[in-house]
Length: 316
Image (cartoon, rainbow, N blue to C red; front, side, top):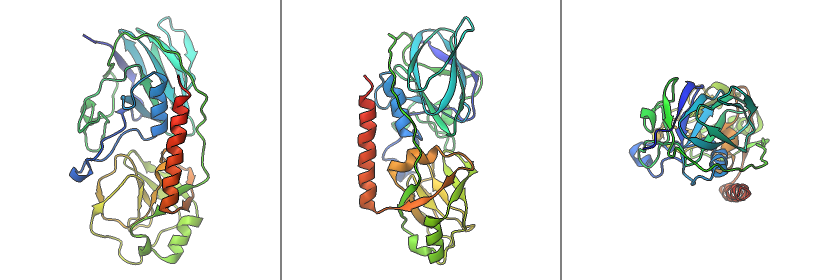
């Protein structure tokens, strides 16, 4: 019987298990969820030799302090993250992202904080043990579905490992999380609901990311986007990355745990190739949008996908 687990000594701000998410469930009101930054999630899992959809621990801003109870395991952390490995004898090793480390019983991982970003990922060999709902163990705290009864982890709880005893692995990769000048979008289905000036402002002015941002949505502050038709429409389906504009004129970008329907006009949709960069923007960071056509968005995603595969192929 496998009894290996991490004891949570500090929970961090928003620590949850995430995998690739729930597919084909929108029609019954179940959002996609899954890792916010897919590329970093995949890299962290690949470094420890996991299958594509293995569960990782996602954390935001400050991560958890974890103590391994029983067994031994290699782990890797992806993102712009400051962390330490605290050994059983109290010696401290400074962590390095995109590199594997080995843990023995009673060693600790202290994930101190992300740096100029929001999300980071901790992956372990064979993955964390999750409870699966609609094909995924991803935790959605708004809907309270997924592992840990759909709740983020708290102090003194346990996160179980799929396998207690592992042959250590050794991998690393040189990877830099780059910033992009623009967040590229395609026109939304209600683009013509907005005034010419508002459409011009949307693509020429900067917006600030506010503190009213979580896994469900990102609220922006900037020039007011004026709706000249109707501030409310019949509720209709939403997708990840769609940009709604409520009556106050401040855009809201729907993120991974978004509701599946909404009744605010949609001015645009963030292209999939830019989503990882979008969700790493912190409060007070600025966004400038750039319009692209659907064909260009498709080509950019193909390039993003190929680039991700090439990065993963560098890891043996």
